[in-house]
Image (cartoon, rainbow, N blue to C red):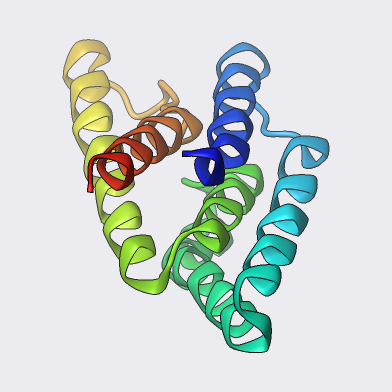
Length: 143
């Protein structure tokens, strides 16, 4: 469970700042990313380091097009938060984590759209990321 303490703290802080200020700050995300890289390297050397970097590429590849299109539907802080979380997870768990986060975000977006009738109401992605990391840490602990 100690393994998930860093990403849980990071996603909690990211969700709080995203809800209160509309941003996920680099001083939250970058130290956690570095800790994840170093932890994975310490666990298994260069093989684990490569796996961590590959796991971090999953959300980057998925979300970068949504960041680059006009009208940005995903913020840069959200992408960095997702990448930092996936660095802590294995490749298979990172795929499940991303699927869970995007499913939660989609349900939340539809709910907001139905409630407000407008796409203008923003849906912070850091909250689904926090919830997804909470679920991942609980399921890893149960196993």
